[in-house]
Length: 486
Image (cartoon, rainbow, N blue to C red):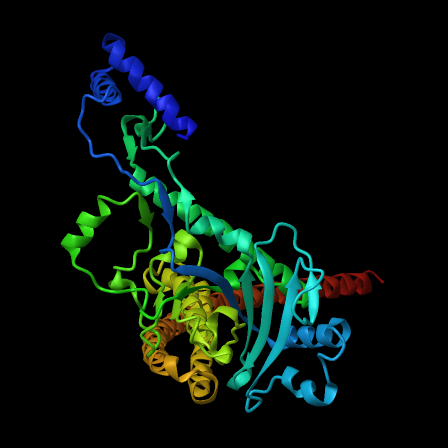
């Protein structure tokens, strides 16, 4: 169905085409063109798509992985929840107390807390159960990873319910039509002069993305509820979100293809795949296993996820302990390890944005500018330690398939942080010098003021002395006069 704005636009264009004398020349021409197209007198290739899906039919959207950094107070909150609320047998003080302690040096470890059932009276053996109305998730696997320098990460691996993902792989899109609409319906606005054209191709893409975004948003909110249950208060923006796709195939999802043959095949299909297999350039190659594909750059804004991970495996031949389709993932044994690197990127972007106003412009007050630079330097020092902690954990906490990618990204991230630190330090030193110079100017002006006040004080003292002397002379004269009269 077309949006209301499009129906109003088409009504105006239809009227302009039928009664051109009433409307402007521009609207009359646009109305005439619209009427010819409506009658089918203009020849256009119609999009034949009847059904659409995000991936091809071999794929199954397994889960959404959520990773977030926590501090020592939040780790203590989880510890208190485990002791007081977890199911019997999941916590042993002798075994688990040390896991929930943070130390700047040492303390490297990980802990799988277990499953949390969502909207289930009965399910897998779980540390807890929670009811979240209309949630798209069925279970959540919780794990903790402790790194050097006191950095700790928590992962929530949210398995999706079957009902949530059925619309993603064969959605009926015959109801989606191409349409046009004014950028603004206000005839006095500049946007009224612009007519936007929306074809079916982009409309179908937006429709599928809308389904995905709804599920991702729901999973994020469910994650926030679970974090609150554990005693943590996090915002959605603090989360790193990874969509896990599983497919029953021995070949990787992303492959290269002949462009000409692909274009010819697309024109004949009534089913459309949004993220096609033939987009090999989208693969980030985070894994040394060719059957593991990943793409990140494009989908943060469109789908609300930071990365899409696609695992291809032969379901009939895979070992049960390596079965991706039926396993809960943790940071230390899966691609989720690389989510910590995404978290570093987000923090770097935040610091960069925070300091940009000072690095690119110098109109702020010197004291305020110096404070921003100093805070940015402190944040970058912490981020540098964070990178170093992740790098130190590659040997024991990162699956070998993702080690080379992680080392490459860490090297690049460290370079970015060092370059920004150097730029900020230069500006900070300059701002410090400027602040000191302004202090000297202030002291100079202050010294003049002090000298002036001292002179005023001396003048006041002089006049007081004169007044006292005159009063003394007057009193002596009166005494002499009195004595003479006697």
